[in-house]
Length: 283
Ligand SMILES: [Zn+2]
Image (tube, rainbow, N blue to C red; front, side, top):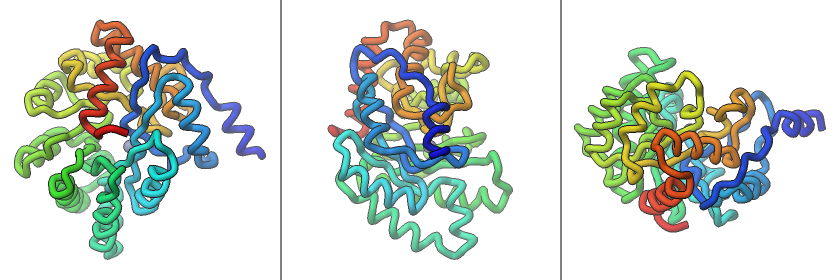
């Protein structure tokens, strides 16, 4: 009961609904924050739909998360799935001698008709030493190959690893549809992504006061290459930084992005929705 109260008290007020529905293309409904209870999936979806976020891509990026994803995408028509082993997960599994078995399971789940992306995979150099980096890179390559083999989109996590992410994608050949989740590159990287036909997914960070460089980079990206996401429960947009994020907060990110792109919110919503269906297929 205490947990229930705390969740309720910390919960940000619902934003003003969007004029046209959009997709949260990267959320983790299987993860809670700060010891809070896991989100109630149905209620989380309903609250998002109420503000115009009527479809979501649930991302399971460890074995438990992937199995959770496999289940909820069959239970809730608003959800499609993405599954992979996160770059911070791969070295742990390798060390335990469990990586090959985990790959077999991810490949099995990735074949589900409502799993439309392999992700999030990529590189995370934030907390990883040289040993972990080698394992992460081979894990990233494995996921790139899987996405191509299954004809699914690729969702990339890139933390402090821009050069290696772009290099490995070029060396191995990116899948037809490649999404940089929570894009954090600069103007030059944004231009390179557009040139290569990648999608740039924008998280709540675009609302942060100190994210001027990110806004400059996003200004370079045409509407046709943009997606939005929460990465819930993390990266909560302003003015709710520090609270638990949820797909219902996407409207705050969309409105900030509309200002960056200097377009009206309806125009942006229409583009985002169309792009999402092009990337993931129909719901
Ligand atoms: Zn994520």
